[in-house]
Amino acid sequence: MRGLAGLALCTAALLALASPAGAQQAKPRSGSGKPASPPAAPNPYPQRFAALCAACHGANGRSDIPGTPVLAGQHMFYAITQLFLFREGRRSNEAMTAVAKGMSDADMQGFANFIATLPPVPAPPPATPPDPARMKKGAELAQQHKCLICHGADFAGGQQVPRIAGQHEDYLQMSLRGFKSGQRPGYTMAMGEALSRVTLEELDTLAYYAARFPGAQAAVGK
Amino acid sequence: MPRTMRIVSLITLAVLCALGTASAQEEPGWAKGRPKANDEAMKMAPVPSFPVPLPADQLPIKKLKLPPGFKVEVWASGVLDARGLRQGEKGNIFVSTIFVANKVYVIPEAGDHKPKTIIDNTPLATGIEFHKGSLYLATNTKIVRYDNVESNLDKLGEPTLIYDKLPGGTDHSWKYLRIRDNKLYYAVGAPCNICDPGEWAKIFRMNLDGSGVETIASGVRNTVGFDFDPKTGNLWFTDNGRDWFSEELPNDELNVVTKPGKQHFGYPYCHQGNIPDPEFGWGKSCDDFQKPAAFLGPHAGSLGLKFYTGKMFPAKYQGAMFIAIHGPWNRTKKYNGVYVAWPDGKGGAKVEPFMTGFVENNTYLGRPADFLVMKDGSLLVSDDHAHAIYRITYTGK
Image 1: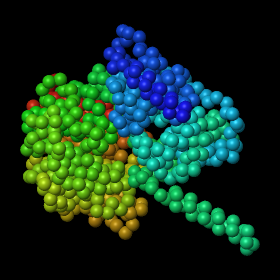
Image 2: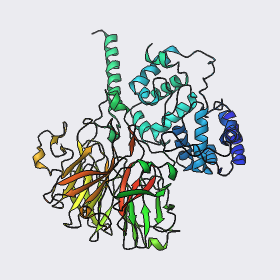
Image 3: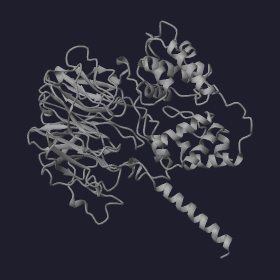
């Protein structure tokens, strides 16, 4: 119920606050050619994030609303691909489609740039300690299914690959199952391929593990 | 064997069988043949293009290198996913897209070259051709025709279905089209990296109403670029070689069809005319297949091909073909560019790089995809990575 109420609230807030495309030129992304001339006006996206996104995702990019992903520590390339998929109506989520629909390219770039400035926020200490057997199984599955190759030994991701360390378990579970069933389109074919041979039970174990990820040391060595 | 042990064995066997089945299921076609134990190979994935075009002033135009006397400029920027290029009779330029945009655009030849979406929400809207007032569009599942298109750019209306028996899928299923002598040429690629392609991996042609499908060439893994030599009428095509064989082999092929319907170009048995496939090549000889006219580089991603039919470029480019080398994703060292090839008159061809400079720090700044020869003889080049169209001119200076 809390989730539905939160969703409704967010949607309403978003619809009310979504403003038309800012005239502000988005920051050039890294690797592009010569830098653009310095902006004349201050970057509006911190304020727009606070007004548009923070109610659901948290001002620091982490909230407890069920099904709402942590944005803290997420990468610009990944963030913009998801805004794009929402805007184009390919990734389905009522609230996010409503948010992204009115965004210009510059808006998507501006929000994605701002999201990338939010430092990672660790998960709060769990009420009950993680089940060691399940964590061990999760670490083994992550090795076996090559999750670390793209998401990194620290699960921090990079470029178009999202950070998954400390992401909410329910969101990870929903995403993994969505990729496997094809219900959630990826920006590339990578996840569909990666999960084609992973069982649903294993997906849930991976979600459990990544949500409680103990850090790169524990994952690689012990 | 004690009863308990037998039960344990049975359970173990059942689990192993289940695991075995699970691991064999549903491997996507492009991953077939990938060395699973090699992390460097497992790390490689198709290079995603950014979902937002680069602003015009950030395109890599100043980094591009051409032969003396040639110049390149940005002809259109902000063309998300610009892939195939074709021109209408009234000067409109049609631009198809592939993995990101799901659109076809029109850009009038005159004016500010801003793209306007004329077809939307169509995945793999990649194969386009213009013929006698109509725009032909081939996705991975069907071919349709929009009539009188240049008079209806604000609303194309419902297309006429020509053919809906394409196999679909995601592997090598996107299309490239040419029309010649009232026949529509297209290909269906192999539904995998390496496998028995069954009735596919062929270039076909059909009547313009979709009837009379004929095979033009067999054993073609994936061609997304072909054109007819204006001198001989022969069909030249690029073919993307198999993946995961090794970093440096096999090469993509440049091929020429000299006996339509009678030639087999080797896939999946033989690669680049001289390497038997380690799995499918047993009992076959590369000598039984048509050899390539030239090599285009390992995992080159050779795409659009167009014979130069303009008058602006120097005489040596008359009769030459331009080839878009998109650049490899499953090779550690990246390279790409626009190449030019001259048929040698003996079934072979000489290939040279023509425009390079799209790679910086082993990262693509842009990736050429297709061509259009403009009426003034200049050459348009689409780029589906930087999302732009460039124009190459010859000034002699």
